[in-house]
Image 1 (cartoon, helix red, strand yellow):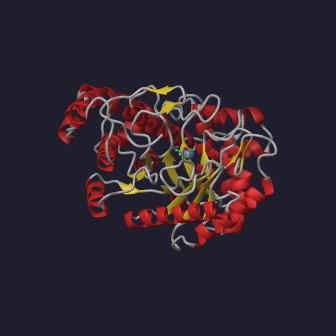
Image 2 (tube, protein in one colour; image 1 turned 90 degrees about the horizontal axis):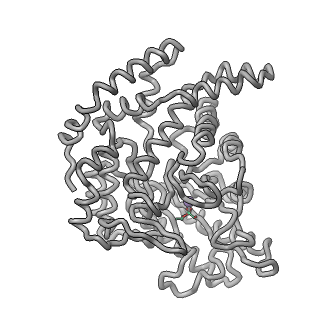
Image 3 (spheres, helix red, strand yellow; image 1 turned 180 degrees about the vertical axis):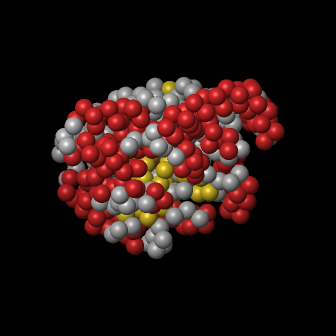
Length: 426
Ligand code: LRH
Ligand code: MN
């Protein structure tokens, strides 16, 4: 699947004139408002988001799955696909692995290949929500299970995941538990939570000193009556008791309808308890749709909390893990991920345009209208010329999806890998 830097430059030459016009117009408008273009461009250039290893093939639902063809057949091919995304978008520099779906067969070779694509390894994900040949089933839970043998097995699995990640240079373990119940009376809420805490303590104690535990919450699915860690509060409660290297992972799709997620982010930042994100979007449940495709204003408000939290020294930008978690049921996974990376950076760039000094004044003075005007002005600014300029300066493509289609990359992948290949993952 060949796409050279020359191909990208040749493609950019078609769009550069139009880009320079719109970039010049936006730059003079923003400089007129006293905003430093260079500062924003450097922040946009350096902002990198990790791609999930389980989202490079077509996802599915219980009602079916429609393959896309040319899906990666191995971790090596997944890293090649992420390498292509990095080359085009200059917005991703890491992969987040899911174990056992992506256990490397040759660590040195995988590290070498990843390095050649400027790809590192972000947090590794454990999996105690499926049976994949282990001795004890996770049908009725894992870290919370009533049977100490099952809990032990689940703890051992997490220790193995830390080992895998350690060999690859990862510094974080993401734990998401499907543990819960489908019916009233099926589970003791307090016993399940106590078992989970006891198990997490063993996992936390086995983490290297420079690692963090990212504890992901989810209100429902696959259990539909209760989930042991259903919300940010329960995750926060456990993290507080585990230690300061345990923090809360916010998957945008893991909230009940109309939950104010930006407020949760603000609260966690204020407590230095935000581990990171699983970016996606949703209309109803954990739909894992393209980030920013349903609720772009919410994503902007979340980044406003993040920028404010960083500027107010609640947490450093580097202490937060920026990761995508999506499932592609009807889109080409690579095109979906290019749209996702763009949407995340658009929300970030818009949030950097907010005059937080003026906003603070209006908040203090109770000027509700002007406070909203400040946000709307930034949100309604088309920042895409800034993203394009940042990509251009980093040697990326002005129009990533256009060049991907122009070079028929998916067709090339199908020719090389086959029509019916299926990537490991959901
Ligand atoms: C659970 C989840 C979790 C992953 C899985 C792939 O819904 O968000 O982060 O382990 O998706
Ligand atoms: Mn997730």
